[in-house]
Image 1 (tube, rainbow, N blue to C red):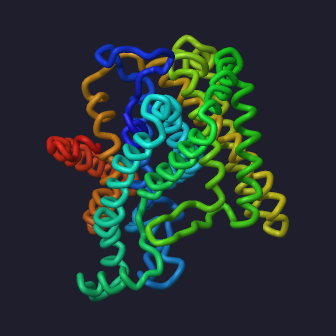
Image 2: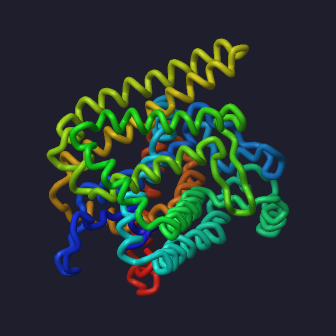
Length: 410
């Protein structure tokens, strides 16, 4: 199982090598990945109805906010503010952590060359597909909404006039490939470095809070300086290769943390079904909500005292690190504790989750655009956009995977 696919499906435990016929997917991790993918779809689906979504503006003039809000509806629902903010704090960090879980075992099993070939195929090809085809389709409604006399020729001219190439959510795929390349290079230089991480992570089943504290400390140390230099919301772009500048090292820290946990085994250590983390799932849920409430309070306080913004950004960066880790631990605990038995519909979502991530942005934008003239409350539109985009993405990917070449990648 290689990188892109293992972002969304559970791989077998690496506790011991077993014959291929006895390999089983880890149900909890596979379902958690599917759940986070659904959260990504929901996040993008409700942005059109987010209370603070910017009004439609010029398609070509900076800051081109349509890259984050392809469609903006006049119907709003304040409740989506919590969902958008809560998701933004943790869910992509958790995605990098989950994808790191299987890197060390894949490197040991395949070696550097085969590992990189598989990653290039399973991450590189979908990234090119998403950037070259899905993104232009997804952003066309933004052009329609911002232009009085839209034409395909006008859209093409505007699109190719940009210095960058907006790729939408596909940024995660190329950045994951870059992180995989770094991990492979480190493995080539020192094939034993993962063993040290494995021994270090063996204690975390008994002391998950120590791991939480360590992760918060590392995350804050790499995130706060970057956020002060670049601001928390800045993005960097080189062609289709975009990333949120302040979170680059933060995401890498979560990816490496996933490698360390996965090197010991996804069915023992921190992620043991009967471990301390899983048994105290309710406590981590409570911590996650309290930590996010702290983030919200700091944001409000910063808005009321902008003269001390550097101080608030520093405090807010530390709160972000705490909230991100607490929410990630909460969902890990929930799924490890309760997701034990396979269910057919969840298996289908898990198996198609990677493809759903790749194609969903186009369906989200067009469903939102189709709902613009419909008279419905913002909440109803958000739920409809999510359900419609998820169903269309799910069905499309399930059909595409019947093609052998697509199945090998997806």
